[in-house]
Image 1: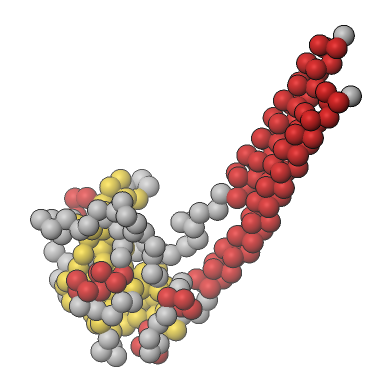
Image 2 (image 1 turned 60 degrees about the vertical axis):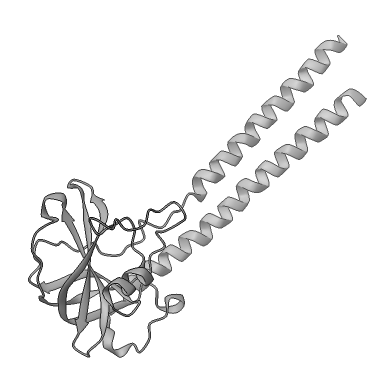
Amino acid sequence: MRRYLFPLILGLGGIAILMSLGFWQLRRLEWKEAMLAEIAAKIAAVPVPIDNLAKPDPATDMYLPVSIEGTTTGQELLVLSGRKGQGAGYEVIAAYETGGGRRILLDRGFVPEEAKAAARPATAITGAGNLLWPNETDSYTPPPDAKTGLWFARDVAAMANALGTEPVMVVLATATGDAQGVSPTPVDTSTIVNDHRDYAITWFSLALVWAGMTGFLLWRIRQRQI
């Protein structure tokens, strides 16, 4: 009986740990789904005029729907991007002057590769979108290409400094005016990672494998005693 004790304790302990990790991921999944639902509701809420917000705060105003009325300045930055069905292209980040005299960043949307050099002079744009401070940069993100001016991620603070605007970005969802070949890329929750279900399946699968290995070990011990 003593021969069975240690493998049995090790096996049951490992199964218990792996199962607890799986259930923890399920709780995280429930939390994440509730958070995504809350964000989706916020994105779809009634827009407020951007000029009514004195100083938008990333901590409280992320995803806040806003309406805009003003003019782009003709200054813009291009961020390497892509779109399903259209291939490689660029996200157009423009300097935008609101009717209230503010100067902010406007993510106008996507242009395909062949439209990179197309003229996009100052134009009046009225529309709605969402405030966003994307977290797309890390230590591996290359700096903007000095020769081409191409950016590899959206960085609100750095882009605001480059274009002389407030560190505030509105991502267009709908717009009226001269689109100049730019199609909006509305904010949604699809880019927010939610892998907790996959993690839970992984932990439960490992628990099953551990149980099988424990059973096999106990069988081998028994066979040696026969």
